[in-house]
Image 1 (tube, rainbow, N blue to C red):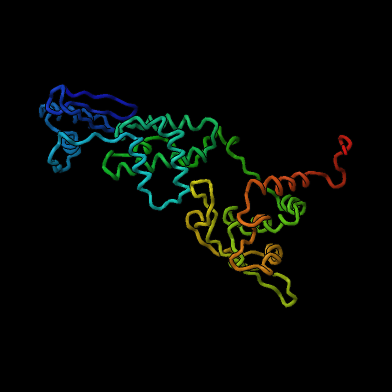
Image 2 (image 1 turned 120 degrees about the vertical axis):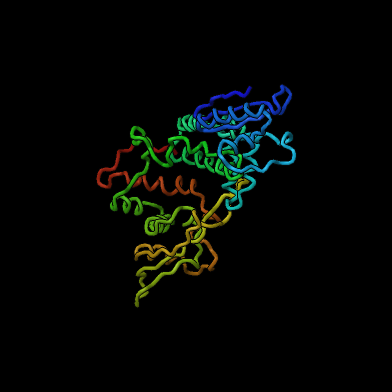
Length: 339
């Protein structure tokens, strides 16, 4: 006898090929209970002599070309087995992105789903994992995990291992924050112009040009710190005063997956020419003088890539602290200097 097992929002039909206890186990999974019951009826009506592929084709009403040796056909891979196959098939991602996907799989996704056959994962399984991931993480982080799960099963569907994507059976919507999470998720701080200028003016002299450039161009950190001198154009008036200019943003720093960095394409491969006003032109114009075309516009003090964490700690955060001090009523000393 064929049997039906419900798992979350999917139904799996199981039987032994040939009807004997020693026959190869066959299984077929549907998101629709009606289809599952129809599959059970078809398997039993043919005395369990049909393979899983034949039963699926009969239920869906499609033509089936039988293989030469149905009995030797392998069972679907587990999610863990298929995840490696999927990751190895990616050809349009950077080494750093591939390494991030591997970490996401190994840290959270495979411990929860890896043991299941790829065609036995239900929408409920995915939803339970998403709910677990939401604890202590921002919605943006959860969205990144969801994107990996969705892409993994989308590839399984293309490989004809499953009928539909179980990630699509959840009610998760990318980057959508529920109402009661709004206060937690909204961590952005938007400055008024006077606030920004106050911070900029109190930053170290070598930090001000980069601050002005980031604010005036809207470039991401990885893009701004990868800009070469040759990508910047500054216009000047007859007195040599900068009046404006532009920058070609077509590259950014990327992780190589082994803890290092390399210069690659911008996010989404968005190459663009960004004009900027006189304030940005005045800030970057001195940085162009006496430099080679391939030099970084904003290098680290010792040369090479400018580290984001170090710059925040040594330049941006001290500027914030200085901007918070009242010029007319500075806070009193809380002790005497030692030494």
